[in-house]
Image (cartoon, rainbow, N blue to C red; front, side, top):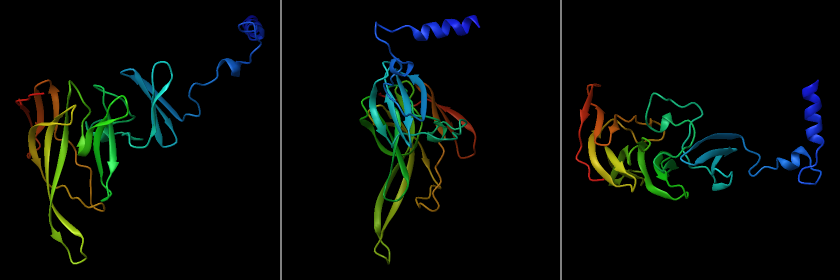
Length: 219
């Protein structure tokens, strides 16, 4: 009863000499949000509908709501590629983004804290950055000709690579195979390599065994 009386008295006291409601003194900086995530590197992801934006530590929206950031409703945290990202966050100053191209398949890259894409969306899967480095599966293709329906036919090749924050591919890790570039048959390829220190990789080989590799990096 005593606590209830104190609360009642507090609510009846005018703030800064002006009578204001509780709603008035808690006017939102950013409102109508569906989800708010923890801060990471000074920014926090906030969700409205199917789009995400970022607020700074003053609550100001510094990256507008957009639909290209990477997140998963039910992330697979055992994988260290894009499928393991539960909500958008910055690591090493970068946040994963994606674009779905004309073939219906997503490619991934990264944006900086100003919302600018600084690592081009040209990877079929990527890890998040750590110590300025990430691992991605790079796709290259060469036009082979046209089929009977006059549709382009491509020869594809895939390489798992180490990439830096400028989007430069610093080291080829291994050739990847059995990736089908058809929307109907496509399956997101898992990463088979990960940086475990500034200059060491763990790599899964064709026999499903792990090995440690020391690439020569000039980052």
